[in-house]
Image (cartoon, rainbow, N blue to C red; front, side, top):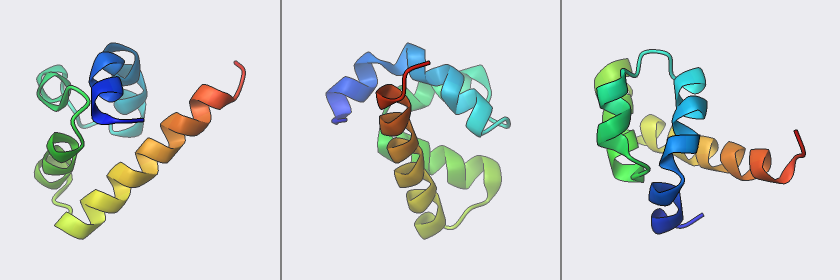
Length: 73
């Protein structure tokens, strides 16, 4: 999923993000708005994660979203 697609589907993805990271507030999710760099920054801010660890978490989350789209519900 590219950046434009992520931003366009952000409303749908917000629920997934809330389940993944319970410490994110609604305004955090509004700031992230599907942007990977914003997600990494918020992971660092809310969870005190090092940059590398936050980047890995963002990558893992992106892969989970891709898998979730391919599995019928």
